[in-house]
Length: 89
Image (cartoon, rainbow, N blue to C red; front, side, top):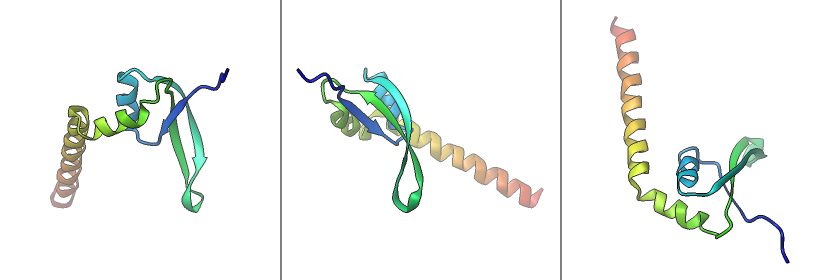
């Protein structure tokens, strides 16, 4: 019998909470070295049913992703307004 834990990992801070909310058990964060010796942090989840990839795909069309995208846009608009105010103020 294979006792290895099936895992799904992502470096997306947007996707990780979605996976957690959808029932995958968070295991750990780990640092890995990617292209150009750039460090990346991965969130690792227990994925006993092998649904991580399907959840990742469903996230792309989810209300949660749309919310995050709108939030990021508005946050950037705040930064632009603050920077403009510093120039004129």
